[in-house]
Length: 64
Image 1 (cartoon, rainbow, N blue to C red):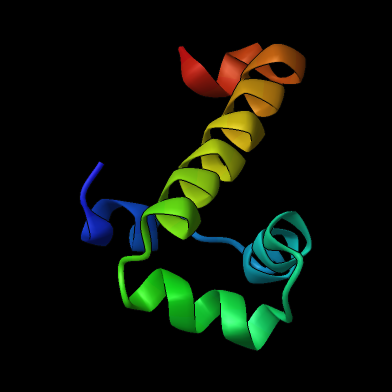
Image 2: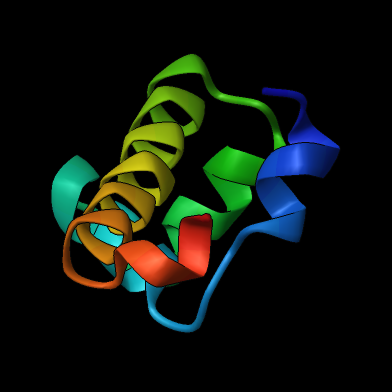
């Protein structure tokens, strides 16, 4: 996933979640993500994929 693809899928609270995962503030998490920090990028991809998987599991009609 490119940075632009990831940014297009961001939702409210994703930087808070990223900050919790990385053990930093949401502002610091956003800065790391925007600087293309590898750990931040990988974690954000997992956050997005996990959310999409949960939606797909509980609302399969949205992905047909």
